[in-house]
Structure formats: structure tokens, C-alpha cells
Amino acid sequence: MTSPRSVIGRILPPSAVWEEAFDDSAASELFPEEEAVTRGAAPQRVSEFRTVRRCSRQALEKLGVPPAAILPGPRREPRWPSGIVGSLTHCEGYRAAAVARCHDFAALGIDAEPHLPLPAGLLPKVARPEELVRLAQLTARYPTVHWDRLTFSAKESVYKAWSPLAQSWLGFHDAALIIHPLRRTFHARLYAAGCVLDGRPLMAMTGRWTVEGSLIGTSVAVDAPVTALPHGAATTAAPPHSAICRS
Ligand SMILES: CC(C)(COP(=O)(O)OP(=O)(O)OC[C@H]1O[C@@H](n2cnc3c(N)ncnc32)[C@H](O)[C@@H]1OP(=O)(O)O)[C@@H](O)C(=O)NCCC(=O)NCCS
Image (cartoon, rainbow, N blue to C red; front, side):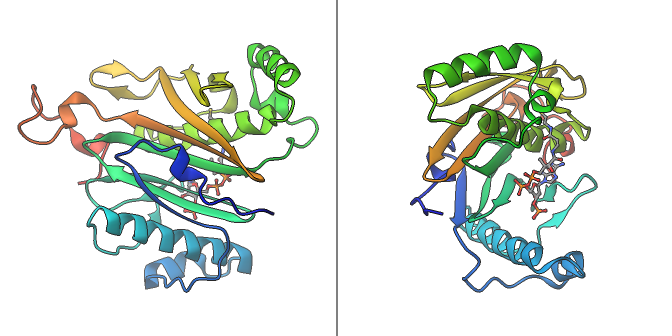
């Protein structure tokens, strides 16, 4: 597998910070409570867990946040220190963490996948009928990109942003993507209720994608509600912030 210089860094907004690794060779210490989470796991799982936690702490350091244990929440979502949102991904040959401040984003989602076709038969489970039509058109026009795998990855990014906000499940058919092949962006229309931001249901997310070497990367960033802006910048009272951001 070729190792490009950066995958996730190409598709994150400027106020998010990130760290990535293409192998597990660097020393990566865990907090005891993190060790406890990985007890009994397969060696490869322990390795990716260690590396992505190191990436997380290095990314947090860029925001001036001291090292902290990143433990899974009730839906396996990473639980970030107070005032931080973020997302993790790992696949063969790649691990990455992205974090940002709650007053910049309500949620982040990142995902990486090998740039290979999805296993046979999986696409109809991932894409809605109207997306299958669009994906066939993309494949005919731009056959070098594995649009099926890219769709899968983009939807996993959507889920990683959705889940901590809504605290609920989102199935693959609960979102429909329109992928822009030249701008390398995507728009996700959401068909599930359960998440309200700024007093309005969250019905869409936007994201970015890239193909770098043998990897696909996707990201989603949900803007923070206006009411989550730092003190003095907001025009209305602060929201029940714990709904979107641990404090
Ligand atoms: C959770 C899920 C997206 C993880 O994706 P994956 O390809 O298996 O694994 P990745 O390596 O890219 O990501 C794993 C990381 O995702 C994060 N994650 C897991 N569950 C999560 C959740 N509910 N919310 C946010 N992040 C989550 C974790 O940080 C995990 O890393 P860790 O276990 O080391 O902490 C996937 O297993 C899943 O359940 N998908 C079905 C739901 C979905 O994608 N719906 C599409 C809606 S349009």
C-alpha cells in the first residue's frame, strides 16, 4: 500500500486539527482505563486503538488540551475532553484523529477506507435506489474512482457526526448522498428525525472526499449552532450545551 503524505488533512476545515499515521510503529502509551477497554482484544485491534489514541492526543495538543483518556461512550463514540468534538478512523495502513472546539463545530465525522470496490452485493444495502442511479452515472463518467466505496465511507462519516449529536441510530438508507465529482464534496440529505440544532431539525450535512494513493478519505463537519459561539459573540442565550458538547 502506498503511503500518501496526508489524507484527512486535505479534507478538513481549517479550524479542525488532525493527526494521522500509516503504521503502528511509533510508541503509543495508553491510560490505564484505555488499557482496560482493550483487554482481551485481538493484537491488531489493540495496535490500531493505541495508534489512534496517540494521534488523538497529538491533535488535542495542537488545541492546547492536555493528554486525556479517550474512552468509548454508550454507542462506541469517542468521548472527548470538555469543549472538544472529534472523530477517529482506522483501516488497513491508516489511522487518523480529527478534533475541533465546540464553538467551531457541533460535530465532526471522519472515515478512511481502502480505495477498492465494495464486496459484491453490498451496494444496495448502502445506497438508496436514487443513489444507485447517480452512482452508475458517476462510474460511467469517472471510472477510476470506486464511487461505491466512497459512498460507504461518506455515510460512515455522516454517522460518526450524527451519532454523538442525536444519540440515536442512523441507517445507511436514512441518508441520500449527492456527490460532486470535481469539487470533491458531497451533500447528505437525512431522512431521520432526532437531532435539533439552533432550534431546527438537522436534515442535511455536507462533507468532503479525497482519494490519495490507495486510500479514500471522507469528512463531515457540522457547524456549531450560532448560540454556541464564544461568550460575547453569541446574540442569544446559550443552549443546553451538554446536548452537543461535553462540559
Ligand atoms: C461506527 C462505524 C461507523 C465505524 O466505522 P468502521 O469503518 O467500522 O471503523 P473506523 O475505523 O472507520 O472507525 C472506528 C471509530 O469510529 C468511532 N465510532 C464508533 N462508533 C461511533 C459512533 N456511534 N459515533 C461516532 N463515532 C463512533 C470510534 O472512535 C471508533 O474507533 P475506536 O473504536 O478506536 O474508538 C460502523 O461500525 C457502523 O456502525 N456503521 C453503521 C452505521 C452507519 O454507518 N450508518 C450510515 C448512516 S448514513
